[in-house]
Image 1 (cartoon, rainbow, N blue to C red):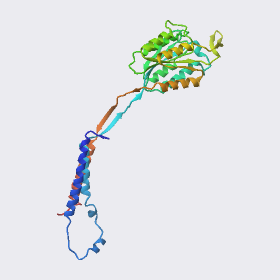
Image 2 (cartoon, rainbow, N blue to C red):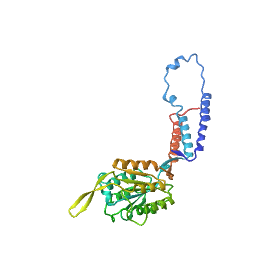
Image 3 (tube, rainbow, N blue to C red):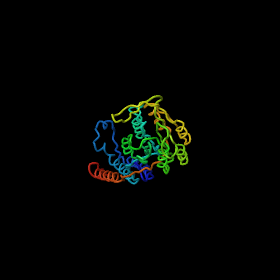
Length: 327
């Protein structure tokens, strides 16, 4: 509870002279009677009226206290208090080409990337996050949004074969830049995840990185895939067949993209390493943003006014009935 006019609480100091005045008046009003000895008087029990003779004054003090508290306008706050939090704008550019079906990550590169990215999204409730997917072409699966439940559902709907196969890294990065460049956030980040080399699209990856740098966008590039030979499932007329291929991609270009934009390059060779990469990015990208505080206050003076009224009525009744004094 807070007070809208706390300066009136200083009126409580008036209770000090009131108490002194009462004590002084009680001392002056004591009657005297000359007797030979008062030793035997202590044996007589005090009546309840004698014990309660100061009770009306106590009620008056409490009533004055309640009146002063009411004048100070006590208020109960019902608010959604929000403080400075950490949040940035992030676009995720995800490779969904055929090689992302390789099973060196479990169950495969694409599903592992989706699972870890979902954990990353849910760990950053204050961020605006969006998703761009690319293979031979690129499109926006979800623009920047703070509704992470919607974003996670759209992530689940990402699958190989949604668009023509290939690896247009430059086009995917350029699409992500276009989606985040007009953001008003202090910090703008793109997380680019791929397992191949640019072989499609009209935009070179370095050109897209230069555009990102122009708009102050950092790119964290993640190369997915273990070293050596990996099994890649291939759809054939007789069903799924596995094809062995060398796990290699253009790491140099990804490193240049990250360095050019002020980000970092990472290599994820298994699920654990991929999860640690996202955790590291999570720690690197922390920016303070200020959030407004909305609150609703309810006046509570009526409660104190009613209490003061009840106390005063009680004092008057007691002084004129059971605790009445005869001058």
